[in-house]
Length: 251
Ligand SMILES: [Zn+2]
Image (cartoon, rainbow, N blue to C red; front, side):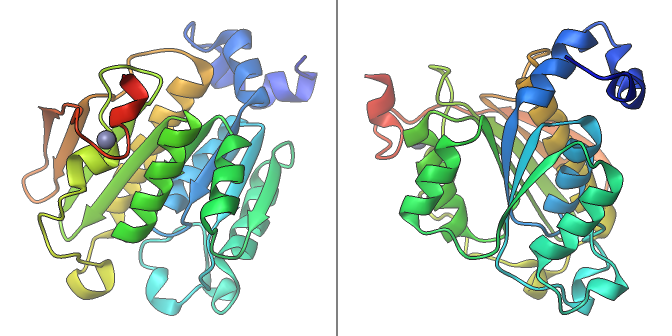
C-alpha cells in the first residue's frame, strides 16, 4: 500500500502508464546496492532515493576529499573529511525519509559481498577500479542479480547492463576481462562533472526500469558517450561462451 504522502511525493512518475501504482509499489519493495559513492554513485543514490526505491545499500570505504566536490554532487563542503557513506546518508535522509538506508563503510570481502548481493534485487557498479568491478561482477553472476555498470574517464563514458537471468547477456569479464588497456583513474586522467553525472543518471534510469519492470534494458548493448562531440553510439556485445565467470551459468 502507498500512503497519501507517498502518492503525492511520487505523483509525477505514477502518472506514467509504464510506472503507475503497481510500478511504484515494486520500487517500494525493491532493494539495491550502490558500490561507490563518487561521481557515478552520487546521481545514482540521489535519483534512486528520490524515486522511492525501498532499501538502498551504500558501500564505500573512502572519505570525502576537496578534489571530489567538482563532480561528486551528493557531498558538500561541510562533509570534507567525513566518510562518504555518512555524508551520503545525511543527504539522502534529507531528500526522502521513506527510504531505508543500509551503510557499508568498510571494504566488502568476497563473503560479505556475496551476502550483500544476495540481500538485494539489483546492483549498481559505480566504482573506479578494475579489481572492484571484477569482484562485483563475479558476485552478481554467481548470485543471479542484474548489474548496471557505468564508467567515465576524461571525456568518454560507457554504460551497459549485465543480467545473468537473460541467456544472451555477457558479463563484465566477457567484455573487459582480458585487460586491453592499462587502468586509468580520474585522479590521473581527469574527468568532467556533467559527464559522470550523465552516466550516473543513465544508470539510475536503467535501475528504475529493471526494478519497476518496464521498458527495454541496456542488456547486450554497450552505450558509448563521446562528450567532446556530444555523440552517443551503441555497440552490440556478446557473451563469451568460454568466460570463466559466466560461461557455466548458461550450460
Ligand atoms: Zn562472462
